Image (tube, one colour):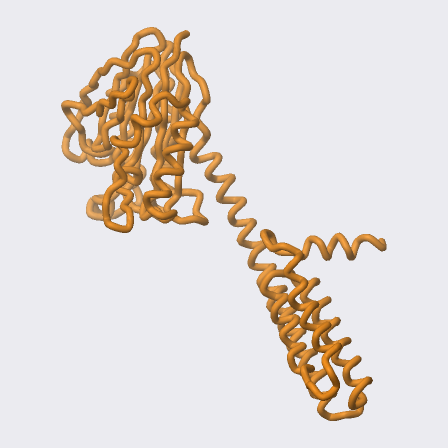
Amino acid sequence: MGLRPWRDLRRSWQPGHAPALMVIPLGLIVTVCVAPPHIHLGPLLVAAPAITVAFAGARVTALMGVLAVAAQVFIGVLREGLSSANIQAQITALVVVSVVCVSVCVVRDRHERQLHQVRSVAEAAQSVLLQPLPARTGPLRIAGLYVPAEEEADLGGDLYAAARTDHHSTRLLIGDVRGNGLDAINNAALLLGAFRAAAHRQATLPRLAVHLDAAFRWDTSQWHQTDQDTAEDFATAILLDIPDHDPVVHLISCGHPPPLLLRGTHITPLTAEASHLPIGLGGSFGIAAYDVQTFPFEVGDLLLLYTDGVIEARDADGLFYPLAERAPEWTEDDPDELLHALHDDLLAHVHGHLDDDAAAVAIRRTAH
């Protein structure tokens, strides 16, 4: 029982603040107490709890308020006596200020706990929505990167997913849902769910693209009265199928930036001859089939997928992030190391502030 108050006291500290900051209000209280009698510093004691509220919790702030009131009583006893109207007014004001400061701490701590709960829910939702990519599947080593535009946000419209098929290949999806907020998150969840439900089946890559487009259009339009309500619901995407025993990659591009193939110090954009309309718009224009492009993807090659948020990130001068120029510097890195370098370099380019969510996937083919 005797140790519980001290454990509570330690828990009241706010994260990231050093206990050394206590020296400031404590030093102020000591200075007021030892000041010569002809120098009246008593009114300054209100600063002690007011300063403490900036870096500590309710219990520590209350403790500092009690010490400040005790110091004021001590000064009154030594100098004018507690019967002095001046001392009584100062003590009363100090008690009121301390109570207000503690109340502010209580409200702030409650809001921070609520924010922590909301953030925990968001992190759990992200782990379900944007599941981590497998580190290895067949001869492939894979890593994924997601960087939200807002520092406190964990969810957005950028997405990626992978699925293993029964015919010894790996299928991947990377996409960017138009817009932001809850609508973008809902559409991203829809697209990911449709991909995970169908990607592992024996359907061809074009049939998978048709399925994603139809599922996206049906879900986004079923509760709307007119086509105009859903005209802006779409997602750019790339679908890939990488066989285990054939050194190639098959892809369908739906209005998405082309992947980069890194081989040694050379970089090649895998630009498809036919880039189809984004997911959600294809069926609206009568597109019933998708063309598959095939590119070499040999042992040692590294494939880099990314969203618009990467290449459209601007620095202070308005210059876009030069991904094609930077990527060859990391061609020898493992997928995890490459994305770590990309993350740091991208944030350095934009000085830590992205205007749009950014996602990337790195895939290296290794020997069996």
